[in-house]
Figure 1: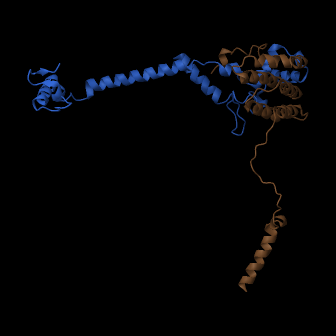
Figure 2: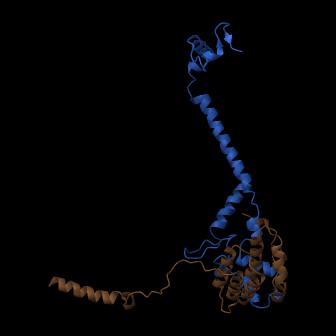
Length: 149
Length: 162
């Protein structure tokens, strides 16, 4: 008697709790969830970030998140990505962020002093079109004494 | 000293907040080299003065119309320090070295004071006469004949071996 009750309840619970497709034997050609590394070529990377910043509905938070994440990669972004980011700053009316982006690139290049002038040279048309001043033009390359510490 | 005070005051002032009234759920601004875009602006929306508001409106127009001063002002509204200011040496090491030297000097004074006024006198076994007698005794009992003290004493000539 008790056994019958238990088996009946167990059957009912199983059919409700476990979805139907999991009760069936798994197909032989299933895809396993390995943490396999998906290789991304440099071109794909550049295209992905360019598309990210070129999205017309990119908001302020996404712009900041994108710049931070891009800064975390072991690279200095290509000029075309920088142009896309500067255009995004323009759409969001954030001239400060545009200047900050240029500063971050200069800092990221580190001891490779030829990278920043190259990026500037490549993005010069955009800077002139949008009216963005470089940090050097604004005197931000020299620290102001009252801002140190 | 005044400069040290200024240093610490400024550090506290910059680490706490610009306005006394701020809620714990407000985002906190921080200048970091590894995150070019902090999660909020340096000057919060509510703290913007009328001129700053006007400048923000002006920013919505053509940026070519902005003067260099406007651009700098807008930058300082969004960010506290530029990258060059974050990288700039602060000269703090001078205070650190000075402080360590002062600490060592103070402990030296405490040691000298204890030595002069607090510690008991040294035991009599620390006197030169006692130690010389001790040495003669060790030689007399031929202590350490292979590598020790007796091995270096010439018992025939009654002097140290050459």
